[in-house]
Image 1: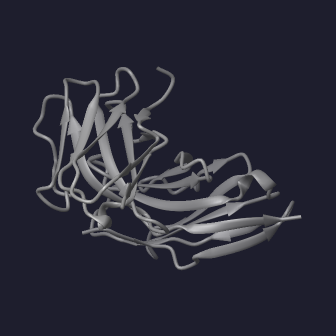
Image 2: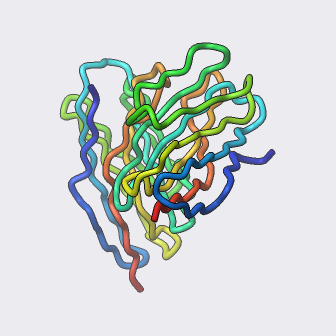
Amino acid sequence: GAGVSQSPSNKVTEKGKDVELRCDPISGHTALYWYRQRLGQGLEFLIYFQGNSAPDKSGLPSDRFSAERTGESVSTLTIQRTQQEDSAVYLCASRQQGYNEQFFGPGTRLTVL
Amino acid sequence: AQTVTQSQPEMSVQEAETVTLSCTYDTSESDYYLFWYKQPPSRQMILVIRQEAYKQQNATENRFSVNFQKAAKSFSLKISDSQLGDAAMYFCAFDTGTASKLTFGTGTRLQVTL
């Protein structure tokens, strides 16, 4: 595709429910990142996938958060037993090997009631 | 650990005027990359300009330029001939060069007035 796409654009859920967010990176980009942006804040790193290497999960805030990536394609970020503090915009980015620029998707706005 | 500080939560500039957004960072690395991203209300993060730390020459992209002071760990963004479309959140970001992740500042909201 032309750019990074994310779905859904917006998600409203009830506290305690599980949610799954999807990211489609730019074709051919080997690296994929997830970031969280709370209201009025900068972006916080969550997790990083690079090819077939073990992902860097150092930014995941708790064991309720997990992410998977199939090869060099789609990634899903799962949040289990959502809490109100999980309300934020979740942004995905991808990067081509050998280059430092990350290309971002439009994000998913998650609201936990 | 790297940190990025943007001390101006909000800035305002008149159309056609020039504005400078400040950014400082802290790192023990000698080789790294610095970025300015623009985030309009659409939420899409758009790369404005990048600077490699090993380059002494300041990066320039059309109306956007940076003042990179490596010793002072300062990386400011200058927007010349400001346009209404420049109104957005601007984030300064740091990458160690291993490209494992970006570290972002808290952002500066830029308003452009007529």
